[in-house]
Amino acid sequence: MIELLHVTKEYPSAEGPVTALGDISLTVEDGDIYGIIGLSGAGKSTLVRCINLLERPTAGQVLVDGEDLTKVKTKRLYEIRRNIGMIFQSFNLLEQRTVEANVRFPLELAKFKKDAAKARVAELLELVGLSEKAKAYPSQLSGGQKQRVAIARALALSPKYLLCDEATSALDPNTTTAILELLKEINKKLGVTIIVITHEMRVVDSICTDVAVIDQSHIVESGKVADVFAFPQSEIAKQLIIPELIRTVKSAGGSKLRLVFNGEEADTPVVSGLAIECGIAVNILYADTKNIDGKTYGHMVITLPEDEKQAAKVKQYLDKNHVTYKEEI
Amino acid sequence: MDALLLSKLFGQLGVGGFLEGVGITLYHTVLSTAFAYLFGLPLGILLCVTDKGGIHPIIWLNKIVGFIVNILRSIPFIILMVALIPVARAIVGTSIGDEAMIFMLIVAATPYVARMVESSVKEVDKGVIEAARAIGTGTFGIICKVLLPEAKPSLIVGAVISTVTIIGYSAMAGTIAGGGLGSIAVTQARVSNAQDVIWLCVALIVILVQIIQEGGMYLAKRFDKRVSRNHKNKKIKEKGE
Image (cartoon, rainbow over all chains, first blue to last red; front, side, top):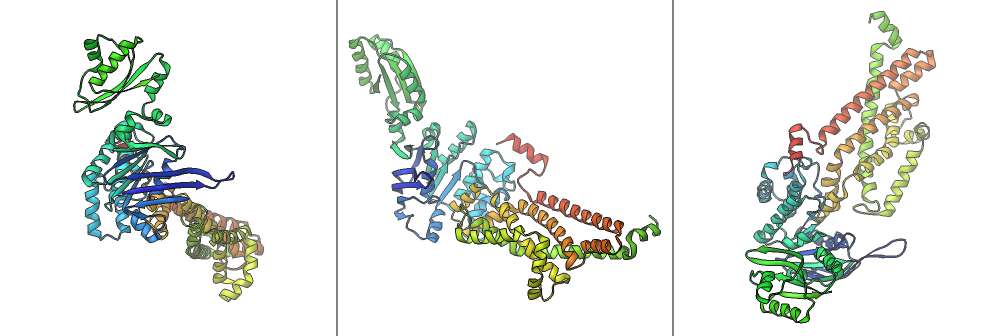
């Protein structure tokens, strides 16, 4: 378990200290894929670097399995870091080393025997699907391949945690999907707890179990992805999670209902049901839903009839069908 | 070229005399470059590592070493050489000859090399250093396993530039302390104003510099893994994943 308790990071500047992180507290349980989402400049990168103490917090505690990293000796810190892998937006591979030598790097530090290291490298390259590129140099690889090498390197010492700092931000959509699938697999198969820093909604949406939204150096809301994504509270979370919806709701007049599909209700066609059962035709202003294993997830915004009786009927129908909704003005 | 022209060209020194001159110049250059790197490489690393924002900042030490390096670097070699005559006498026992000259070259070249090394090592991507720190690499490990190997091509280029500079120094030093092509040129100019001899020395130095420059650049390129080494690999890269 990783716990940040009241972590604050300030940088000195000519006009006094600048706050990069203000009183951040969060808990990452073992087995989670924890997403930290925010716009650039929100403090995400500093936050993830406080977890392995690449950045030393000005105040607060960083507890990794109960051990406060801000208090341990340098040597112990190095040991703990070997239990926390990290991958980066710009991959950060050693350009003068081959793929296999890059993956071998942490093993050399940990004084692995030559044969054991060789076997481990082969195993890792197979895991990330790059066995045939063992002898290539990073400059001969594509972005996605480089990130795979970086992942193999980060996992070399079988860490319990993996930090991903905008790991897919430099990749095209298809490659992003492939890398996210790989991370998911690593979480499932190896039980590695993953912390993902990103500004991309889809990263959190597709792999995270938990999410924290960070804005202007503070965490504005956090929780299970399903909950936060269903009803984002803060302005910034709404902007990040449902930007189109917010725009639609703001631009259209009249009263509206936002329907939220959490995958809990049966796959009933709500809108046509309304028309058939209640005889009320509603206008769909916005819909972004997807069907996963026969269950519906996402948001829909419909106009509410101006007639109050009819509006009440609509709500009744939704209640009856266990559809979560919220009135939007 | 017939024998008469040859002997005219090489004057009383003869071919052997010039070859010996080339040999001495090379000997001075190689030996003093080697020693300059022996001292300059660690100094350059120290300057980079202890700097503000380096991997192990020790600001006061960085300031002191940087100051000394700057002083030595700002004295023109020809003046430094004269100033070093008593020092050379005290340390190597003589102020003329090979030992004295190599000593002076080392003193002049070490700070130069240190700055060269510093700038090469500073080019290493900060992200790569961060990645190494994230897996628990200490300062020494980062120097040996990240900074030096990653900076290797740039270090080789720096060594080429340093060597060429030291050839220039050695020609100057030849005038007061030792032999070599510089010494031949100056002596001949003084004694007989033999323009052809002087120009021949110049030509030989130019050839030496060319060989070192081209050879060094070839090595730097060969050791650099950042560029695809053949067309086939390049194609793979373009095709992507």
